[in-house]
Image (cartoon, rainbow, N blue to C red; front, side, top):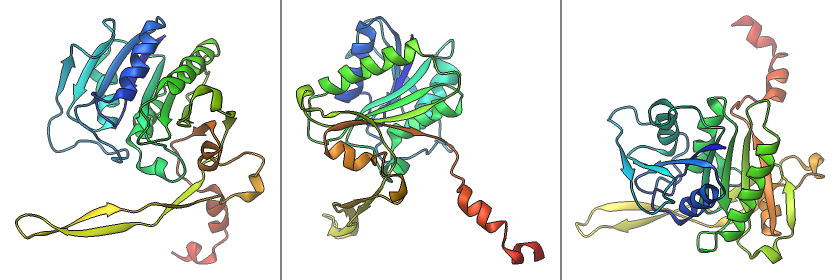
Length: 263
C-alpha cells in the first residue's frame, strides 16, 4: 500500500521511525512528513501568517522511505504532503506512534490525532497510533499491532473514509489483555499553573497537573468500554472518530425552543 505518515513528536521521534521502518520493511510504499521539532498538543492548528518549509531527511529511515522535516504543525505536514510532496494520494494516512496516550478529551488537543484527521478530511482512511506512556521506549508491541491492523485494513479496503484512534498499553506483548473497540471517555486533570521567575526577574507560568479521573459520560453504553480505562487494563483500544462536532441531541432539543422563532 501507499502510506503517508506524520506525527506531532517530530521527525526525530523514535515512534515514527519505528512505525515507518517496519511498514517499509513489510513492502509498503512509505512517505514520512513530520514537524522538524516537537509539536505536541497543537491540536488542528494551521500555519497562516508565515511560510512553511520542508527539507528532505536523508538518514534515520529505511532507504526506500522518502522523508521530510516540515516547519509547520502536524496538520500542516499532512496538508502540505497531499498538496505538494506526494505525486498520488496515499491509500492511508497514519500518525504516530505517539509518545503518550491519546484518550478521552485529550484527543481534542492531540496533534497526532489531528494529523490523521487531516487525511480523513481529505477523504483518505486514516489511523492515529499512540503508545500510552511518556517514559516507555519499547515501541515493538505497538509496531507489531500496527502491522497486523494495516494488513487487515489492506485486505478490507474501507469503502468510505474512516478515522481510527488506536492506543497501545506500554507493556510487553504477552501482557496485553486483548484488543477492544472503545468509546471516547472524559479525562479530567488537576490543572495547576506553576508560577515561576526567570533569570531576568520576569514572571512566567508553566502548565502542570496530573490526571484526576477517567469519566464515563454515557453509562448507558457500558457494554463498550471507555478508552482510558480499557488502556489502563492493558487492552489495545480502537476508537472510530469523526470530524463533525455537532451535538445531535441538543440540536433536536433546541428545535423546540419557542424564543428562537421570535428572533
